[in-house]
Image (cartoon, rainbow, N blue to C red; front, side, top):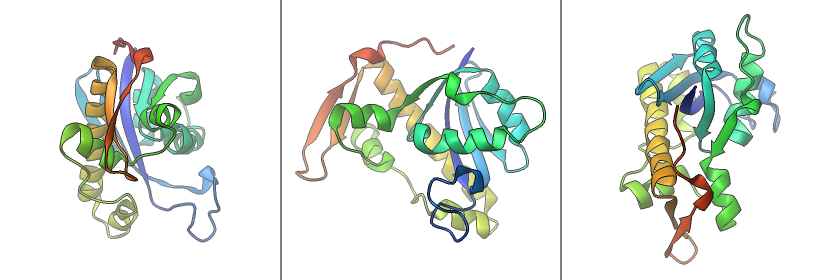
Length: 191
C-alpha cells in the first residue's frame, strides 16, 4: 500500500453564485495532483481523468496533504462517488493533514506559503484563488504546474514532519518562529 501526498484545484469556490458554503457537491474539480512514494513519481489528472485518479487513490494506505480533511477529501469523495467502478473510501484511509496537525499543536492556522518559506526557504509562486482563473482562461499547463508545486511543497514538509518530527512555525503576530515537535509522527512507513 502506498502513501500519497496530494492537492486538488476546483473550477469554482463556495462563494460563487449557486454554490453555497460547504456545498462540496457543487464544487467542480479542475485538477488533481499527487506524489506516490511507492512509485517515486508525481501524477496529474485533469477534469476528465478522475477515474484514473480514483485508481491511484484506491491503492493508497495513507493520504497526506494540507487542509485535506476539510476541503480536498470532501470534494474528492463527492466526485469519486459519482464514478462508475472504483470508488475509493478516502475517509477510511489513514490521513495526515499537516494544517490540522499544526492547528492542534500551535492553536492557529498557517498558510502553506508561510510554512514552506520558514522550513524550505521557498514558497508558493501563486495564490490559491488564481487556480480558478487559470482554468477559466484555459491555461491548463499553468494550472497543472501550480497544483504540482503545492504537492511538492507539501511532500517536502511532510518529509520534515516524519523524519525530523518537527516543523518551524512562524508567528505572524510577533514575527518570531516556534519549533513544533510532533513526537507522534514517528518515522512512518511510506509503503
